[in-house]
Image (cartoon, rainbow, N blue to C red; front, top):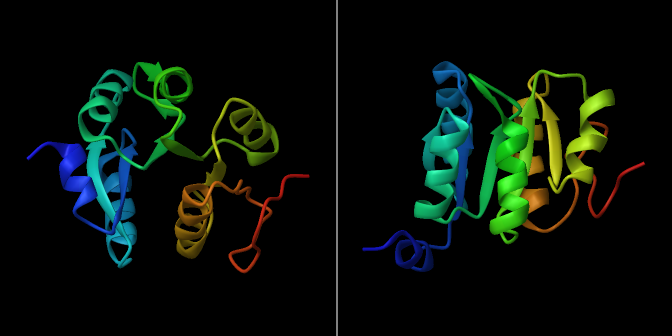
Length: 149
């Protein structure tokens, strides 16, 4: 069964994790898979592998770290904007949100979440982006709608 066909047979939204630290990927997978409406369709650690996975798996959303070994997550973000505009992106990073949130949103991401945030913020950022809304670190999980100040 092709990945696209598999995606059509489930109500779950498919998330691709792009993070070069295995323990962080595992934690994100566990957080996401506790949700009834979300599933992790793949995990990648490099820009090259992430691009191949996007093409093969057709995720609904990429949860993307900016700092990947030997490359930058911004290359993945650019690729998505050029070739897979329907794929939503949320950046997750340890970089300061004051500097990076606006920048990644300007380049097509629908969210930025700091690795210092609470678990419920990760899920809220994913759902917000899947709905086409922008999520920023200042937004609390109870907030709704578009926001970026």
